[in-house]
Length: 387
Image 1 (cartoon, rainbow, N blue to C red):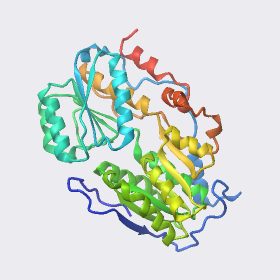
Image 2: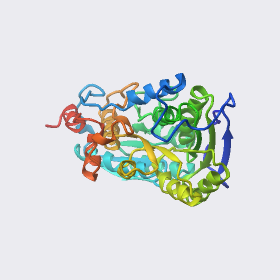
Image 3: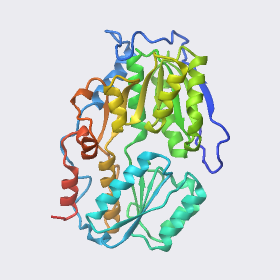
Image 4: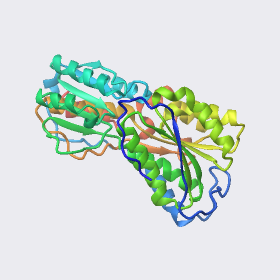
């Protein structure tokens, strides 16, 4: 089921639809209304439910990701932030919080949009090298996307923080750090919610983002592999699409729902798909479709609270991730080794079990209180030697 990784150097001509049927050929219908699983779940569904329940708890204590250090080494320097593409809203949000965090150590941010294109990413890296940047922070970009550019970055001795991607290869921890919310894990939580809610008999339409090899892998390993291993009776249909094709997504979803009335779940890899998902459901005149997504923006949780189609939202604290990226950049700039095997803690599954405990306002979203009471900002300032 897992697809091979693809570079997005060439634009995808058209979104594709892939059907992945469950192995046993059992009934793919859901046992009851969305949010109302059978009283006694199957073994597969109960395993999935246990995973979601464990992911639904808050984090109330800040644990320093590494030893304290003097962050003043990065003061006055420019840090280049290179997101895979600013067409993905969450990457812009993370960059804003990275900027906010680094302002506490008098460093400035230069944003350079990678545009999901190896040539643009290479140009951004070259600009950082030419400017003798204090550090480069990428988001959602793996080395193979622009190997020559990143080899040049290493040769220039500029610290590189790989954000949103897992460690790969034998990178020098004195020059390369990894900070990830672990999208494979988050996507698996979303998948397990669908498995549990359907009593392991979901017929689901997955919307998969193919912008970069990283986004493709997150869907393959976090979503499709989870269904393959944990839900023999699930039927999975996949729409593959990139950020430049979103104007086509509504019609693709609508036509798929009309053609296949057995589909009762839509799983969006990211919240950026949700406007098209909502419109596609409305266009299909279907009222029996339940939606699960990953990102957990305020509008998503508000839709859930209002009784809309969304019933599961897996999220991570984007503000906190910006601060963790800042910590990694300042740490490397100070000559400290990168934190190895960093486990980003501020992530959570939201559903009917805990939604009622949240304050759904822009202020609450910005504060990170949805994820618990841990004061990570004060914790980092102390860690950096800022009183």
